[in-house]
Length: 219
Length: 226
Image 1 (cartoon, each protein chain N blue to C red):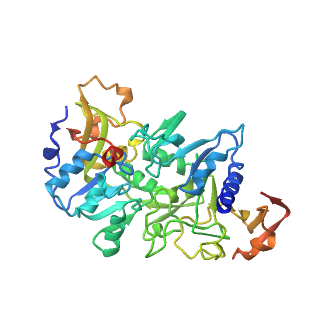
Image 2: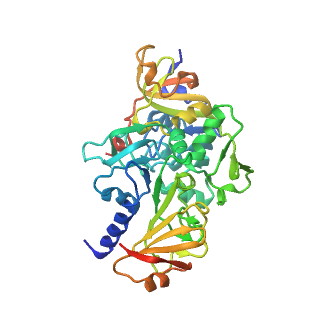
Image 3: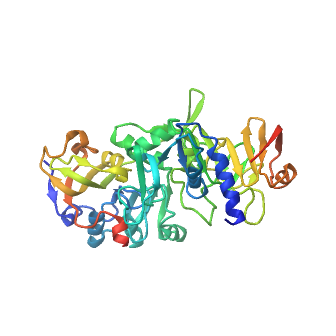
């Protein structure tokens, strides 16, 4: 596995440890989807697919696709035993009503107040928010899975988001290839660092001020 | 009993400038036969309301790509690049609505409610121009009901009273849209006699349905893509 991929695996593995047995979880497209592959042994979680079911299973095998069963990205998937189908109004009632325990999403920017920008870059990328705004406003815990810095090496964890917000003050945890950061009322708390980095390096790669936890964990 | 019409007859009354809801999610659950008939008829300047605009050559995506819509209300247009191009060129007026808000606004219309209060969009561009209410110490946006003159719904089975069974993940926006639109055209793969569809398996009660059309095109975007 290439080093970048290894870092991603480490990150999603760390997030997977956050879910208690039986949690209902909604995973965003891309890196967040990988989290499902690393649920610790002995725990089961139920995945929610916002287009209309719980019990989202793996991608459908080639030749066995059922066009009536797709995920929120439109790809043919499967439903596990114990799953349930419903319509969009029910699906988003489940989300907004606080019945989804965790959502994991990517981010373009996140800031020290737990604000999230992940759905548009004005003039460049305007795909629409889809279900992201409902998920971030409604899920009990919002976890951001992302690279610590952008393609140009600039911080993505900012004092204040500059892009249009997906939601205000809803982010609970930020997990990156470098750090595990909790959003608290007093600001961002660096609780753990990746095994191949240092606290100093994390601080350097982060625009927002970080409180350093008394006991620093590693992942 | 509801009229069983040909697709061409069913879309006859959809005039230029009409407001149309099309159920489906990334093509899954789109009424392909009805969309095809509407495109053949040449209706234009539609005010289209849909969850997303699927893919350029699939279902509801064709309405965008063949220049039949003047406005679009949707939650996601990212999988159909033509929607974005037309939005940027000013050819298509696009209103982006959070997906849950879209479903609930249509449901509110069909349920006779004056709107819904949602936390979604608070502190974002979505709240612009909307009334904010504080209920129990928490801020909510007042989102207004959303209706349409017509809706296209796709079912696997319909009985002659319009009761419809929509399997698996094809339900998505269909229930809310069937409630919200004045004239709901139901495309069904199989049309059965009253009594042949178990009342316990009805996803959408026939009370919302205006006419039934037999599907003649493949049900799936996967099949269409193959």
